[in-house]
Length: 581
Image (cartoon, rainbow, N blue to C red):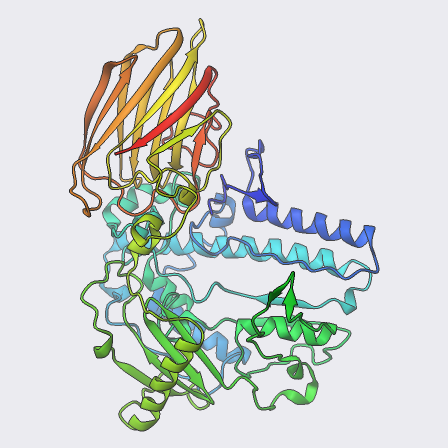
């Protein structure tokens, strides 16, 4: 989520954009959480409450203030290889990894820090400074929430569960880092030569930035790989901290039993004394799949045998299975490769690790124990069938486009969509699916005698999309091609007064089934062509990760930076109609 211009909902209502020029999402979430928990505790002090806080950090975009970034200046100049070694030594010193753990090597597809030139090092070190600042600011705000809760009555009998991480660290920034993560999700890589031009603005509102994949790998020390690689612990394993002074007396104690996030619910049910319903509102409920780990809360449980015997993993056919201290892992694609073709699952290579002896998956035993490996591979298929993992799908960018995938949506199979002023924040999958086809949008508007300004209709924002607006009395249609290029088509004369019909024809040049091809644009006012031109490439998979369709104003981030948000249209809008061809 964009941290400077987020699209937020509370219950079913779109939250108005803040007027605070220093607004920042993480701080707002913390303020909201503290306010809410104080209210419920004041209103019903004897009633239990459940507070769940999921900050955006450190998911992309890496947004944070310059003041925080400056705190980390120069701290990552040593590069990812040296940093990873330093982190490994700190982990051992703290005792959070076993003393005999081995540091796994860098994947061959990631560059050595020493192979980079001086400008690459300058850019990538700064991208890491931004990431560190982003995470540190989030730590501070989460600490505010913890402190506020601990000041409430009965704090000693409050259970805190804190999970640090979003799977592993994310590698979607690609080999050379990213100014717009949405490029990755549309199947495009970026070049450091372009990105370094924006080095002074990273973290700010102009970019949806992300650090290089090799920094993600370094952040996942001591494990192999990164987020999206569900086959290895670098893509799945996170630290979890539990605090409950009334019950847990082993303060600062460490536990190493194998757990999964689905074990949290049954643990809470057990310690709170809840029996989950077998039926809810007449609907039979699926059985709880997790296993309580409340037994680990006792002091004498340090060496207790773990109760979770088996757990499968899968993302994009990166597959893994844990069973009784062993882990079988099968890698399909590195996460910095969004284009996945020619994959043959029958040729996927499996690796085998004894987790009880090899914490970091450093020693592949596949050749030594082929029968064990085959047993786990067969067990993976059984678990996959049991938990609805099949059929397997290794596509990447295509899966972000609901229309390409045939997913149901509120847009349905309609060819015509009509909206009215005030329709804002309509999410991607409910908006007109205009990608990879010809379409038109017609706006029936009213222009006052003193003229009008503002957004008529837009979809997307800084990551990509389009906008039809009036600025300085002149009509413009802007197509944002994934923040790489802005194509602007402007009427050089002022709009006439009174009732005006504006129409944009978007004629796609690709054949049926072809994605991301070029298009011709024609802008008309009252039937007369006022601007036209060509767009060499169009967005293939999705305009944006979080911003939808707006009529009459622009919520979220701007389609370009020529106007100030929310850029509300000062004329009248009777209706806006899309026709898909």
